[in-house]
Amino acid sequence: MFTHLNEAEKAVHFPPDRRLVVGLKPRVFVIILVLLLSTVGVAWIQYLIAGLPQDPTLALPTEAQSPKGFPAWVRLSHWVNFFFLSILIRSGLSILFDHPRLYWNNDCTPGSEWARFTPVTVPKDKLWTAKDDARYISPVLGLPGYRHTVGIARGWHFIHVPFFVLNGVVFAVLLFTTEHWKRIVPNSWQIFPDAWSVFVHYATFNLPGEPNGFYQYNALQLLSYFAAVFIMAPTAMLSGVCMSPAVENRFHWLPKLFGNRQGARSVHFLMMISYVGFVIVHVTMVAVTGLTRNLNHITIGTDSPTDRTGLFIASGIILGAIAFCFYAHWVSWKRPRWVQHVEAIINGNLWKLTINRLKPRIHYDKKDISPFFWPNGKLPVSEHWKELAKNNFKDFKLKVGGLVEKPVELSLDEMKKLGEEQNITMHHCIQGWSGIAEWGGLPIKALADLVKPHPNVTTVVFYSFGEGLYGGHYYDTHTLKNCLKPQSILAWEMNYEPLPQVYGAPLRLRIENQLGYKMVKWIERIEFTETHKTVGKGYGGKNEDDEYFDLIANT
Ligand SMILES: Nc1nc2c(c(=O)[nH]1)N[C@H]1C(S)=C(S)[C@@H](COP(=O)(O)O)O[C@H]1N2
Ligand SMILES: [Mo]
Image (cartoon, rainbow, N blue to C red):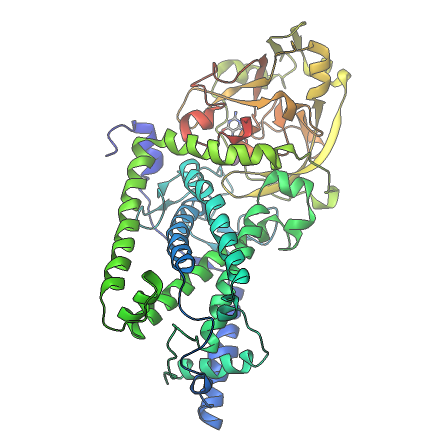
């Protein structure tokens, strides 16, 4: 299947070290222990001292309840949700493993993570880039799995997000326009003590009476369904949105709901874990409380305890979803451009109307500057760059040309005379890490004013001295519009010092609403053009060409 990959690609995707290690900070174990003690522990104490509480399920009416049963829209959205959720979780895992560490702090300093999924301790004595840090995940768990497949994984994730949200919204609307909301929304405080009593039963292995789900759920079940629909899903959606650089830059207060941007990423992960936990318990309960009847409820909407139709249909749906997983792998490896294009068609258009219009704002000041900043990309091997570096780039001349009235070549000193802007901003890498730094340099607007692009120019190409992950010149493109937004600069300064080589000397790009891979480092020359389609392979950048990163920034 992988014969079409070249050696460099195989080396990245199938590294020799494929260990999967889960490391948690000791305080995480303490929290888990406290959670267990305050629930299961207390349930046992109550059971041993006061005996089993009365089973509230016995007091529930068994039939003739209204609303009852499972209308077609409930059944349909349930299975649609199952399908989307499985794709979102599996592609999310692939994304997570591209930066296998979770933090509550914005700087992502190695060692400060509360959870890690890598055995690697970041070496201090050599350059260890964020891409070096990416881990392997089995394709059984991840979509597409393997290592450093974040571009394709994001494709799958984002293609399904709008439909997952839409399915949820349609479900919620129908729930409240019919009376079915009463089935999963608590309407009396009594539900909480009742749910606790049911929980004491389960926790002490005394199965409570089982109401027929066609008419009633027990109190704990009702609360779990409520949480899955009205707490976990919205929290997952909100924390997902908060990871967008454009959203963090414009609506800084939103990620703050989760502490900060990395808090949002951690919560997003915790929602995934909650869903996995929910699905395990849910499926187990469906199986042990009358599989055949339960599956008739949720597939054909009847209450027959013997008819096998539901069982067959549900098995068919699950097999279909598994078959789709195989198909998705085939697409991921044989037709990755499809994923990239479909994502661009769906999300590109959505984003064009929404977050691509946002302008970044400044929120950070000196005290927020990160003590650590993950580097990414390989230092240029070009002799020309090395020569220039020896002399601190005194002989460097930035070439600016293309469809402009007045092409120029500028030294760093000449650029400094044109103007300087200093901004403290947050960097968002597509892999998941972030960092806050000060960047000083020339607003691209000043450069555009100088060279005067033709009226038909829409795109600016930034060529690097450096190479891409799989070789070949690194470059990326931006819309002229993005280049003219506030804080779009060519930076020669980082944290009030000359830009270090690792971080892109002599010049690097800062276009704040974009992800890190669009911020070309070691810039050699700039070209104003009508389209990105004639540059490189034509997808808008080295990562878009070779790693199938999102095309949406250029729409
Ligand atoms: N020339 C070049 N520029 C590059 C890259 C690269 O590999 N080569 N990597 C990009 C990525 S993926 C990120 S996240 C940022 C990292 O910038 P930093 O090293 O300052 O953190 O640089 C971007 N610019
Ligand atoms: Mo990145």
